[in-house]
Length: 352
Ligand SMILES: [Zn+2]
Image (cartoon, rainbow, N blue to C red; front, side):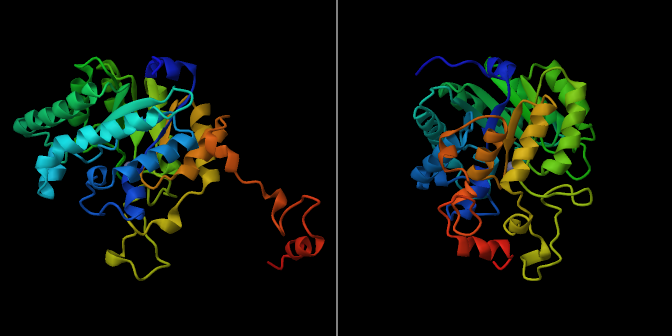
């Protein structure tokens, strides 16, 4: 494969699109269980993971993120499968790498991925050692797979974010560190997102920013604050859901119009009515790019149609654009002369 530009060089030229959301999409497709949310699918149905990578590639993602999210020691311990850790990690990295080879432009970046460990306790130094060990083993597997950079994401503690960054930085690989914006809008150890990002920049992150939990509407204002406070590149990777000021995260959304949801909580598997459409995600990508936020993606809930619309909004024409909507030949809404007038009349009368 050609030697590609580094992440830094790519970002210097313009936005980098990063498709994510493998966990939710594979749950919807019936290959992954909501709750524990462990990506066993990587071993059980690798062809399905490969296909989703391929769909994101066709839709215009510049990055194949190895599906190692939540494939860490603590998550696997909860389901009694810690012995599968190394196998899942290496297989996920290989799947991402193999799809990247299918890219006709040979420019696709491959990213390793580490995330919140769920065991970090600011007041317990022993937990810091364990967290660092968990990051180190995953980062070593990613480095062994020759990834172009590593994303540390959905991190909710300042201290844990620094441990993740140090682990990546010690290998010399470029790091993207994305924080999660809980309802309160600051990190669990009480530090603001902005202050945390500033310290991550000082500690050598290539990109700092946010991913998951918040939709475009409630992530953008925080990301713009981060953009104003740091000089390095900034990431915005929201969930494609219509979060609001009163319900700023997808966990906090309520659906009063539906009485049949278990626990009366749409998160995580009844969020369908809140899903952003492709035009909303396209508008988000444009607004992010205009704000000089260059690492632009979509997290849990994202599907290839979102990514294609975002890529097109940034002036790209990915392979899947061959099938982008063209309503001119629709039997009733179309404007093409070949469309029958009686059918068109149905639409013009508002009869459909
Ligand atoms: Zn997510």
